[in-house]
Image (cartoon, rainbow, N blue to C red; front, side, top):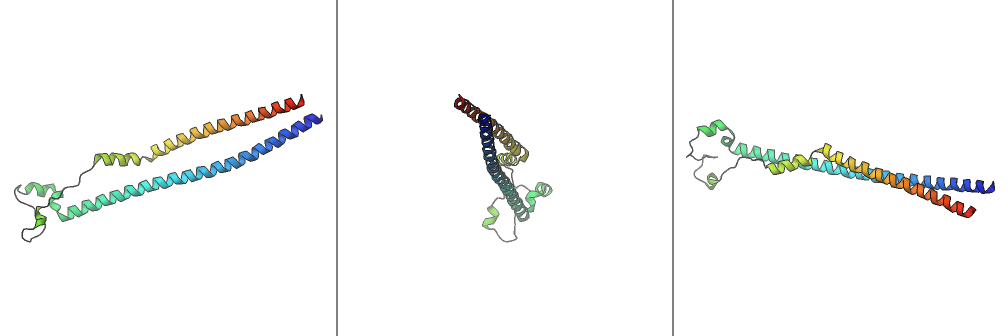
Length: 163
């Protein structure tokens, strides 16, 4: 009876130690997860901010070009102009500025595709969530196996001591 009670108290002590270690590990894991989530949200917010800045730059540039020479952006006026005449921005005599060509804004399809790929938040978060689930599953499986093997090792040691 004494051997059984000693064995039972040892097992209870081991279980309490394991539970305390698990709670400490769980708290550390939660802190790490929160830090990672904050980093991810910071990255996403930074990407969105950069996208909005690029968009504003493009709109400002477009507006400035449109104001500087509205004939470029109005197709009716462009069709009615003779192809030989040059466009003038001012009424002054010939200047170097008249020889400058003003290009209409163009869309860089490669950059646009990259921006659209970068801002697909659902896809981004689904990938992160899938990785997170995989890591959680593997770590929980490993921790369960380690706990079971530790318990079996303790039982074997106790059996060896009893014999």
